[in-house]
Each structure stands twice: as structure tokens, then as C-alpha cells.
Image (cartoon, rainbow, N blue to C red; front, side, top):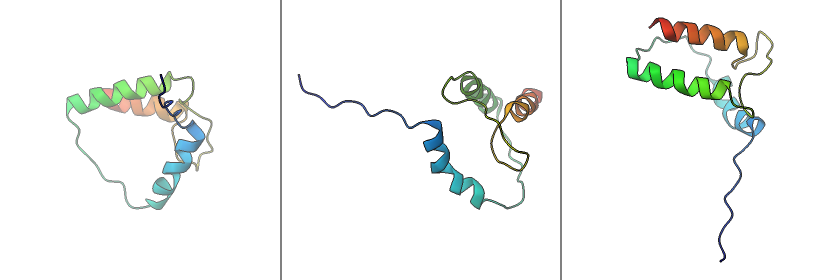
Length: 83
């Protein structure tokens, strides 16, 4: 049986390169958003999966770099659990 092989998912470095221009481009003021409890629960769920993923997860960052390191992740989870 002939078939097409599924493409491998891009690695973390490739994903970062795809989104980095979008993150760097935004330099505007912070804007507050309101999330429903369901949205918060969904976000917490996906962040937990991301945090425990062997191929993605937290990384080491300088203070001026954008992204989630362990400290930023823990602070974000704490904020989301307060809502």
C-alpha cells in the first residue's frame, strides 16, 4: 500500500523563528483582557502540557528576552489561578 508519510512537526527552534518576528514587532502598551473561567482553565491546561513536554517547555532566557522561563511560567500560573 502506497501512502504519504506524515510530515514531522517542526522543532522548538523552528517554531520560535516562525513567531519571533510577530513578538518583536509588537512594542505597544500592555492591554488588559478579560478571560472567562473556561478560558483560564483551558489556558492552564495547555500551559501545563507545554511545561511538562520534553521537546518544548521552559527555556533559559536573559531578562530582556521574550518567552517563558521557569520563573515567568510560575508567576503566570499563579496569576491565572487567582482569577
